[in-house]
Each structure stands twice: as C-alpha cells, then as structure tokens.
Image (cartoon, rainbow, N blue to C red; front, side, top):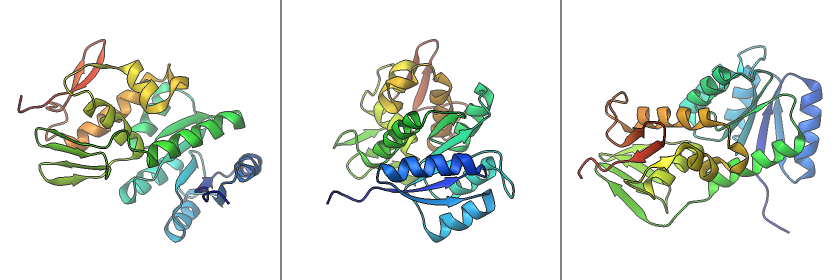
Length: 231
C-alpha cells in the first residue's frame, strides 16, 4: 500500500458542486470531509483538521471571506477558493486574506485536481536544505521555519514558497513571471495579482514598516528582490 493521501475539507452550499468535486477527489485517493456553510466549516475544521480546504465564498451562516480570515488566525493550512466571482479585485482581496489559490466557477475537474496537487506539494516540500540569513531575517529551509530578529513568523505554504525563491536569490531581481512559474507553476503565467498579494502579506509579517520595506524590495516594471539590510 502507498502512503495515505491527505484529508481535504470541501466547503460549499451547492449540492451539484459538492457531489462532483467529492467524487473526483475520492476517486484519486483523497479523504473528503464536507461542510455546507461557513459556520459548519469552522466547526469541522476544529474537530477534524484537514491538510487542505476548498472554500466557496458565497454561503449562508458566515461567508467564505470571514471563514478564510478566521482560519488564517488559527492555522497556515492551504486554502483554495472556489467561486463564481472572477474579477481581479475579488481574487486579490481573497489572496490578501491568506488564500493560496483561486479557481473561478465553472471549472474543469482536471484543473482542480492539478491545483490540489500543486498546493499540497508546496506545503510539504522544501526548496533547499540550507539556512539562509539575511540581516535579521533567518530562513531554515530544512525545518521550514522563518524568524525575524528572533521572532518566529508563521507563513502559509505559498508565502513560504515565494519567500524561499527570493531567499535563494538574495540580491537578484526575480521577475513577477518567474516567481509565478516557480512558486505556483507554469499554468499561472497571467496571474500577476497572485504575486502582489503574497508580497503584501509577506511585508506585513516580516517588515517593521511594510510601507517602507527593508527586506523585500520592489523593482519597478521588473519584480522583486530580497535585500540584506546589513549589506
């Protein structure tokens, strides 16, 4: 027997989506638990913590945005949002709250499965096996731990993936498209808003003044670089 596949919590009030997604993921070996609204989602999450959450936005008894925000206060578990809302503003607002990925309904089940595999892979795989020190910022990629001035910082899997890419190239400019391909995958070539949202969240968590970053520097029209403030 192979290794047990992760448990996924599916949160959606649409019976059709619930049935189709659950059957597709179970057929690929995943264990599925479900919730029909935001309130039930939080109850299930506390009772049986999963390895991944698939989260609708528009639901009764707490919407997806509130659920995402609450879970991020408790955990860095990966979250993929599934929603009919597909504007860039909608996507960026959810990523700013800490979601790892976003799929617009209707979507192909094959695309969902690819996203699930990619997110779970990011949450379990380290990029390198060394410790990177950049001024007061320390990244232990073997233990997947990040600290600033001795203070431990909790990152989501996608936040860690982006930071690790920057940390492996300290001082070098990483273009937005390159960060997309390395942290999310080649199928995300047009999702530049994803990078902006994660960079904003990283600055809030790592910088003393996110409006005047010392570590993650924007290079206009190019991308970002990780700077060592100590020189």
